[in-house]
Image (cartoon, rainbow, N blue to C red; front, side):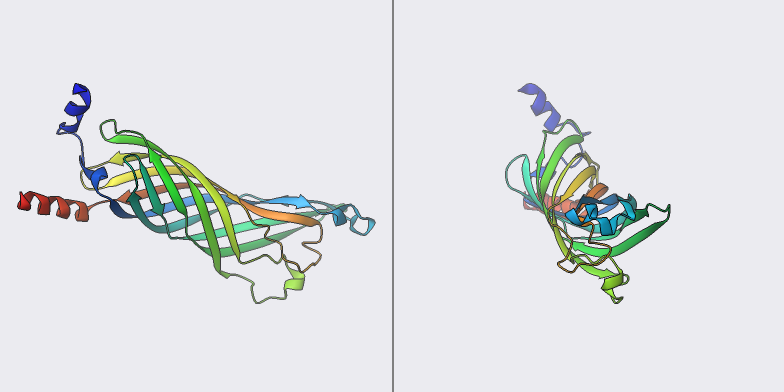
Length: 234
Protein backbone atom coordinates (compact mmCIF):
# COMPACT_ATOMS: atom_id res chain seq x y z
CA UNK A 1 0.00 0.00 0.00
CA UNK A 2 2.93 2.32 0.61
CA UNK A 3 4.24 1.94 -2.94
CA UNK A 4 1.11 3.30 -4.71
CA UNK A 5 0.98 6.15 -2.19
CA UNK A 6 4.56 7.06 -2.91
CA UNK A 7 3.92 6.90 -6.70
CA UNK A 8 1.00 9.33 -6.39
CA UNK A 9 3.25 11.87 -4.73
CA UNK A 10 6.15 11.32 -7.14
CA UNK A 11 7.07 14.77 -8.49
CA UNK A 12 8.20 13.11 -11.74
CA UNK A 13 4.66 11.91 -12.49
CA UNK A 14 3.05 14.14 -15.11
CA UNK A 15 -0.64 15.14 -14.99
CA UNK A 16 -1.08 13.38 -11.67
CA UNK A 17 -4.86 13.79 -11.35
CA UNK A 18 -5.60 13.81 -15.08
CA UNK A 19 -7.75 10.66 -14.95
CA UNK A 20 -9.91 12.15 -12.18
CA UNK A 21 -11.57 14.48 -14.71
CA UNK A 22 -14.75 13.03 -16.17
CA UNK A 23 -14.29 14.32 -19.73
CA UNK A 24 -11.32 15.05 -21.98
CA UNK A 25 -10.99 16.41 -25.51
CA UNK A 26 -8.32 15.98 -28.13
CA UNK A 27 -7.57 15.15 -31.73
CA UNK A 28 -6.22 12.20 -33.67
CA UNK A 29 -4.27 11.47 -36.83
CA UNK A 30 -3.77 8.11 -38.46
CA UNK A 31 -2.62 6.10 -41.43
CA UNK A 32 -4.28 2.90 -42.57
CA UNK A 33 -4.16 0.04 -45.01
CA UNK A 34 -7.46 -1.26 -46.34
CA UNK A 35 -8.68 -3.99 -48.65
CA UNK A 36 -11.81 -5.73 -49.83
CA UNK A 37 -12.76 -9.18 -48.56
CA UNK A 38 -14.76 -11.05 -51.20
CA UNK A 39 -16.80 -14.22 -51.70
CA UNK A 40 -17.45 -15.59 -55.17
CA UNK A 41 -21.01 -16.06 -56.39
CA UNK A 42 -22.44 -19.15 -58.11
CA UNK A 43 -22.29 -17.24 -61.41
CA UNK A 44 -18.49 -17.35 -61.27
CA UNK A 45 -18.59 -21.10 -62.03
CA UNK A 46 -20.95 -20.79 -65.01
CA UNK A 47 -19.66 -21.42 -68.56
CA UNK A 48 -20.41 -17.86 -69.71
CA UNK A 49 -17.80 -16.58 -67.24
CA UNK A 50 -15.07 -19.09 -68.08
CA UNK A 51 -12.89 -16.30 -69.46
CA UNK A 52 -12.51 -14.82 -65.94
CA UNK A 53 -9.71 -16.52 -64.01
CA UNK A 54 -9.95 -14.71 -60.64
CA UNK A 55 -10.75 -11.48 -58.80
CA UNK A 56 -7.91 -10.30 -56.52
CA UNK A 57 -8.27 -7.53 -53.87
CA UNK A 58 -5.33 -5.18 -53.36
CA UNK A 59 -3.89 -3.47 -50.26
CA UNK A 60 -3.88 0.33 -50.50
CA UNK A 61 -2.88 3.00 -47.94
CA UNK A 62 -4.83 6.05 -46.78
CA UNK A 63 -5.05 8.48 -43.88
CA UNK A 64 -7.49 9.84 -41.30
CA UNK A 65 -7.98 12.90 -39.09
CA UNK A 66 -10.53 13.49 -36.34
CA UNK A 67 -11.46 14.58 -32.83
CA UNK A 68 -11.54 12.79 -29.49
CA UNK A 69 -14.19 13.03 -26.77
CA UNK A 70 -13.36 10.75 -23.83
CA UNK A 71 -15.80 10.34 -20.91
CA UNK A 72 -14.91 8.47 -17.72
CA UNK A 73 -17.38 5.74 -16.73
CA UNK A 74 -15.38 3.90 -14.06
CA UNK A 75 -11.85 4.14 -12.68
CA UNK A 76 -10.27 2.30 -15.61
CA UNK A 77 -13.12 2.38 -18.13
CA UNK A 78 -14.13 5.22 -20.43
CA UNK A 79 -16.47 5.79 -23.38
CA UNK A 80 -15.00 7.48 -26.44
CA UNK A 81 -16.62 9.26 -29.39
CA UNK A 82 -14.19 9.77 -32.27
CA UNK A 83 -15.69 11.72 -35.22
CA UNK A 84 -13.26 11.09 -38.07
CA UNK A 85 -12.80 11.78 -41.77
CA UNK A 86 -11.03 8.96 -43.62
CA UNK A 87 -9.55 8.97 -47.11
CA UNK A 88 -9.65 5.52 -48.72
CA UNK A 89 -8.63 3.68 -51.85
CA UNK A 90 -9.55 0.09 -52.63
CA UNK A 91 -9.18 -1.95 -55.78
CA UNK A 92 -10.04 -5.27 -57.40
CA UNK A 93 -7.97 -6.80 -60.20
CA UNK A 94 -9.97 -8.94 -62.63
CA UNK A 95 -7.61 -11.52 -64.16
CA UNK A 96 -8.62 -13.31 -67.36
CA UNK A 97 -7.56 -16.63 -68.83
CA UNK A 98 -5.97 -14.97 -71.87
CA UNK A 99 -3.38 -13.30 -69.60
CA UNK A 100 -4.96 -9.83 -69.55
CA UNK A 101 -6.26 -8.06 -66.47
CA UNK A 102 -8.41 -5.08 -65.51
CA UNK A 103 -8.01 -3.03 -62.33
CA UNK A 104 -11.17 -1.56 -60.84
CA UNK A 105 -10.12 1.27 -58.50
CA UNK A 106 -12.49 3.07 -56.15
CA UNK A 107 -11.51 5.91 -53.85
CA UNK A 108 -13.79 7.61 -51.37
CA UNK A 109 -13.96 10.04 -48.46
CA UNK A 110 -15.82 8.57 -45.49
CA UNK A 111 -17.25 10.36 -42.46
CA UNK A 112 -16.92 7.92 -39.57
CA UNK A 113 -18.23 7.96 -35.99
CA UNK A 114 -16.45 5.28 -33.92
CA UNK A 115 -18.17 4.64 -30.58
CA UNK A 116 -15.59 2.89 -28.41
CA UNK A 117 -15.07 1.53 -24.91
CA UNK A 118 -11.54 1.89 -23.55
CA UNK A 119 -10.22 -0.21 -20.68
CA UNK A 120 -6.80 0.76 -19.37
CA UNK A 121 -4.36 -0.55 -16.80
CA UNK A 122 -3.21 1.28 -13.70
CA UNK A 123 -0.52 3.86 -14.38
CA UNK A 124 3.10 2.87 -13.99
CA UNK A 125 4.75 6.25 -13.69
CA UNK A 126 3.81 8.07 -16.91
CA UNK A 127 2.70 5.00 -18.90
CA UNK A 128 -0.53 2.98 -19.03
CA UNK A 129 -1.58 0.26 -21.47
CA UNK A 130 -5.14 -0.05 -22.80
CA UNK A 131 -7.44 -2.09 -25.03
CA UNK A 132 -10.37 -0.62 -26.92
CA UNK A 133 -13.32 -1.88 -28.93
CA UNK A 134 -16.64 -0.79 -30.35
CA UNK A 135 -18.66 -0.12 -33.47
CA UNK A 136 -17.98 2.41 -36.21
CA UNK A 137 -20.71 3.57 -38.64
CA UNK A 138 -19.43 5.31 -41.78
CA UNK A 139 -21.03 7.34 -44.56
CA UNK A 140 -19.44 8.11 -47.92
CA UNK A 141 -19.17 11.88 -48.37
CA UNK A 142 -17.74 11.80 -51.87
CA UNK A 143 -16.09 9.50 -54.35
CA UNK A 144 -14.53 9.94 -57.75
CA UNK A 145 -16.57 8.62 -60.61
CA UNK A 146 -19.91 8.78 -58.83
CA UNK A 147 -21.36 10.53 -61.87
CA UNK A 148 -20.22 7.84 -64.32
CA UNK A 149 -22.48 5.16 -65.73
CA UNK A 150 -22.47 2.50 -63.00
CA UNK A 151 -23.22 -0.19 -65.58
CA UNK A 152 -19.52 0.08 -66.53
CA UNK A 153 -18.16 0.18 -62.96
CA UNK A 154 -18.27 -1.71 -59.70
CA UNK A 155 -21.15 -0.13 -57.81
CA UNK A 156 -21.10 -0.18 -54.00
CA UNK A 157 -23.34 1.08 -51.22
CA UNK A 158 -22.51 4.46 -49.69
CA UNK A 159 -22.67 3.56 -45.98
CA UNK A 160 -21.10 0.87 -43.85
CA UNK A 161 -20.57 -0.26 -40.27
CA UNK A 162 -17.64 -2.11 -38.74
CA UNK A 163 -16.51 -3.75 -35.51
CA UNK A 164 -13.26 -2.18 -34.27
CA UNK A 165 -10.71 -3.52 -31.78
CA UNK A 166 -7.34 -2.11 -30.83
CA UNK A 167 -4.52 -1.81 -28.33
CA UNK A 168 -2.36 1.15 -27.34
CA UNK A 169 -0.41 3.06 -24.70
CA UNK A 170 -1.16 6.29 -22.82
CA UNK A 171 2.00 8.35 -22.37
CA UNK A 172 1.62 11.26 -19.93
CA UNK A 173 3.61 14.42 -20.65
CA UNK A 174 3.58 17.69 -18.67
CA UNK A 175 1.10 19.43 -20.99
CA UNK A 176 -0.82 16.61 -22.71
CA UNK A 177 -1.39 12.87 -23.01
CA UNK A 178 -0.01 11.18 -26.13
CA UNK A 179 -1.35 7.79 -27.21
CA UNK A 180 -0.13 5.55 -30.07
CA UNK A 181 -2.69 2.90 -31.01
CA UNK A 182 -3.12 0.04 -33.50
CA UNK A 183 -6.70 -0.79 -34.45
CA UNK A 184 -8.30 -3.39 -36.73
CA UNK A 185 -11.74 -3.03 -38.36
CA UNK A 186 -14.02 -5.75 -39.69
CA UNK A 187 -16.73 -4.51 -42.06
CA UNK A 188 -20.19 -5.86 -41.24
CA UNK A 189 -22.19 -4.89 -44.30
CA UNK A 190 -22.19 -6.48 -47.75
CA UNK A 191 -21.34 -3.48 -49.89
CA UNK A 192 -22.66 -4.93 -53.17
CA UNK A 193 -25.89 -3.40 -54.45
CA UNK A 194 -28.86 -5.20 -56.02
CA UNK A 195 -27.87 -3.94 -59.47
CA UNK A 196 -25.83 -6.53 -61.39
CA UNK A 197 -23.20 -5.81 -64.02
CA UNK A 198 -20.11 -7.58 -65.38
CA UNK A 199 -17.98 -6.39 -62.42
CA UNK A 200 -20.14 -7.54 -59.51
CA UNK A 201 -21.74 -10.58 -61.18
CA UNK A 202 -18.91 -12.95 -60.12
CA UNK A 203 -19.16 -11.71 -56.52
CA UNK A 204 -21.59 -12.77 -53.80
CA UNK A 205 -20.26 -10.67 -50.93
CA UNK A 206 -17.82 -7.79 -50.53
CA UNK A 207 -16.83 -6.28 -47.18
CA UNK A 208 -14.06 -3.98 -45.93
CA UNK A 209 -11.07 -4.85 -43.78
CA UNK A 210 -8.81 -2.17 -42.39
CA UNK A 211 -5.79 -1.91 -40.11
CA UNK A 212 -4.88 1.55 -38.78
CA UNK A 213 -2.16 3.21 -36.72
CA UNK A 214 -3.32 6.27 -34.76
CA UNK A 215 -1.71 8.89 -32.61
CA UNK A 216 -3.97 10.93 -30.31
CA UNK A 217 -3.32 14.04 -28.23
CA UNK A 218 -5.58 14.78 -25.26
CA UNK A 219 -5.54 17.38 -22.49
CA UNK A 220 -3.35 20.45 -22.74
CA UNK A 221 -4.03 24.07 -21.65
CA UNK A 222 -7.63 23.36 -20.57
CA UNK A 223 -6.35 20.80 -18.07
CA UNK A 224 -3.86 23.29 -16.61
CA UNK A 225 -6.51 25.99 -16.44
CA UNK A 226 -8.80 23.73 -14.39
CA UNK A 227 -5.92 22.91 -12.06
CA UNK A 228 -5.20 26.62 -11.52
CA UNK A 229 -8.85 27.27 -10.66
CA UNK A 230 -8.77 24.50 -8.03
CA UNK A 231 -5.64 25.97 -6.44
CA UNK A 232 -7.23 29.43 -6.26
CA UNK A 233 -10.31 28.05 -4.50
CA UNK A 234 -8.08 26.43 -1.91
